[in-house]
Amino acid sequence: MHSRLICFNSSCRREYAITDVLYNCPKCGGLLEARYDFGKPHAGAWKAAWRERRMSNAPLCQSGVWRYRELFPFVDDDRHIVTLREGNTPLLDGPRAAEYGGLARLTFKHQGFNPTGSFKDNGMTGGVAQARRLGMKRVACVSTGNTSASMAAYASAGGLEPLIFIPHGNISYGKLAQALEYGARTFQVEANFDQILALVRALAERLGIYLLNSINPFRIEGQKSIVIEMMDQRDWSAPDWIVLPGGNLGNTSAFGKGLREMSELGLIERLPRLAVVQAEGASPFYEYMRAHGRTPFRAQEHPETLATAIKIGDPVSWPKAQFEIETTDGVVERVSEQEIADAKAVIGQCGIGCEPASAATLAGIRKLTAAGVIARDADVVAVLTGNVLKDPDYIYRYHTGQLKAPDDTPIRSTFGNQPIVVPNDAERITQLIG
Image (cartoon, helix red, strand yellow):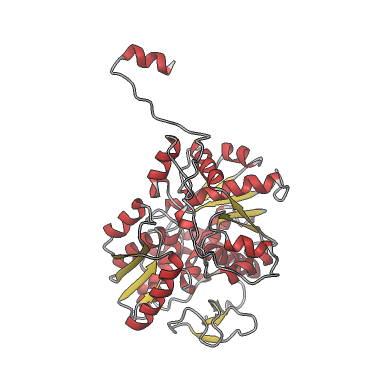
């Protein structure tokens, strides 16, 4: 099967070898994507093979990414692949969250069940496989948390040296701890995410380091597996809506590409609509889409949100995300810090924990149903991108009434669950329990 890189810019579409170390088109500067000549569709045979692989103990079959390897065949030798049994993340019903969001029913696709606790693992196994195929020795990323944890784990497991650059003082310690534990060399730079990304891209070119941020097209290929697995778990019946948080917009790009390819190959009968939700303090894509393209895309110089995983002011994948939103007749929404915090607490009441950025999905659903954009009886899957333990300080501060927005505005503990200090007295405790 012929694999190649192609410029995403519709006015260019220049092609490059799948082994070229590129992140943007050298001709026009556009984003790149991997393309394949799938040939005659084999939908029925592929579905049967993927279901059968669930029963296998082979490492690649146990991976919720490489189980579907026919849909991203860029790797020419399986020995390049590093798998930690990523993917295999569940679909979970959230009745309380559905009621809060104005829906009859709501299902969560929880990527926090991944090996390092976030959706990044789905993409990172693809990116690291390509790095090994290219003979790279060092890999790097800029990260506010989840990418660094994932890259550190997969690079170390694959015998590569991980180099991580993070905004100084703008990372959850739960995520930083993972990167340190997995052996990454970590540099805390006194700049914001977007400034550091420009710096690291220059360093990568100068020092021969392979960049594994979401601008890497092979990261996007791995992240396609999230929606492929979602459709498999739903017996290939597409929902009405898929709702996801919007930061660097890599997932939006990956989901749209995966859905289009599945539709073209006859694996699903229709495209779900995509809804992307950003935090108010980091919402350049929302602002751009709200203007309906009448004004150029403008980066947000100083993004601010406690949902650090989506604290991105200049998302590199916005052209791809725009295309996927428009192709699926999707929407973009934004939500406040208060709305994110309350939605996160409601998700927790379902027995389902998540990091703050994940809860933007439910907060966005609540606004979209209230506006009549999403119907109450719609079939909706919301993506939770990270594990509840990614940012435990946020949780404690919310439930104890200490959480404040970046501008120092107090966030109400609408669904607070403060711990109670009690004496060593059985009678008194009995009275309190009631």
